[in-house]
Image 1 (tube, rainbow, N blue to C red):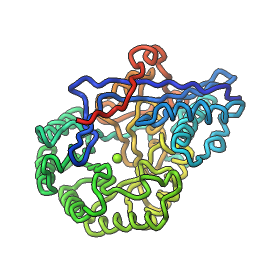
Image 2: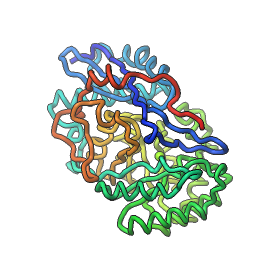
Image 3: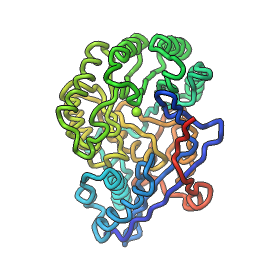
Length: 407
Ligand SMILES: [Mg+2]
């Protein structure tokens, strides 16, 4: 079987006013997400089998589409999808690497179809796959400090009513602008914990909002999270390697500084720390784990592809660490992540974004969607989904411009 071509589709969904959400800001900024994008690739073969992948769509859409068309497609044409690992070795260009990760997933989809086997069974090498996955509601992005922060509690109760047993939230809109302090945030979280009860799992993602200079405040916050029995604290502080590790240019000494800040935070707070969602380079993850800087690695399948995700998960398992992937794209990225989590023994739970992004539900036929807080993977071969071409050409036509609007 040979690959004949790679198609690309850019799709968008505009949030209704009420569903717009805050992407978190500092200073006077309040970035608001007005729409969401998907960059879908479909790999075609001479035997009629096709595979889907998704290029991480947050920014630089045109550069990523060009990377697919000008670098990845020529590399794949005429080759076998069974050679995906060799065909998708990363280089030094961010956009090309993201396009390669998508191609890697699409090739796995084809291989699954050729073997008439669901992807999670192909990825599982130890007989420890679990097709029924507990999902956590990933949200907490629609409440605002300048409005009514208690909306966060309303949302958590809604997730609980919908059958979810866990939720991840964010730190809210600009703290500087609204004069928010750690004690004020902890007061809100204390009321949240009282509302949802002791059994409901809570996680906090700071999206690296704090700088290393603020480590004292962050430690105070982490201690509070431990006392409120939060499961993990994700990306608390900006790390050096997040800017340019994937380009391979951050000095190891600078990375070591970041690792030391994280290790100190873990030691002083006793709180489990998670990170790694925007890291291509497995050496960076290894340095952080070996330096006792991370308890949990939340690698992203749309950033690294399935071959590398599996290698990293195995390495983490050998060191007794959990791999709990990040997932914040659309139906295709979510399906790939779900199959990966199902096949990964050091799994814990699956991230399900709850921002009413219709590209999760309507971009593909037979989308994978949780019910009552659980997702059961289908036994269809490969990813088990197909692109809905009518939706791509119709209601999901591309919207130009940045997905974030600064208020
Ligand atoms: Mg995160």
